[in-house]
Amino acid sequence: MIIPDKTIKLKYSLLGAGGKLLSELDLPQTVSSLWEKVRECEEIGSFSKFVLTLDFLYMLRLVEIDNGIIRKVQK
View: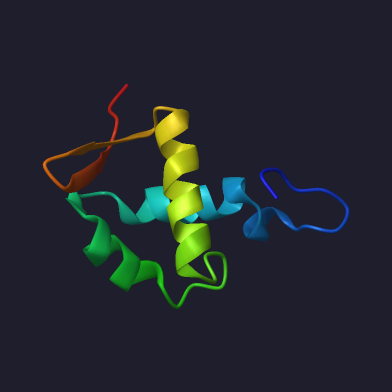
């Protein structure tokens, strides 16, 4: 589920879902406002996958959260 394989397409893996979330994070926002933007995207599919994808991006240090606001990490 994290990476694509012969049964999971890229867009349905956590890498694909993470790309979708990162594309929506041009401006810092709350987690709930980000969820409202992506809840209908087929890459995300459910709130549990949304949270799992955010955790994945956080572990990779691609996003950070401060006082309830999530943003991309600038490298």
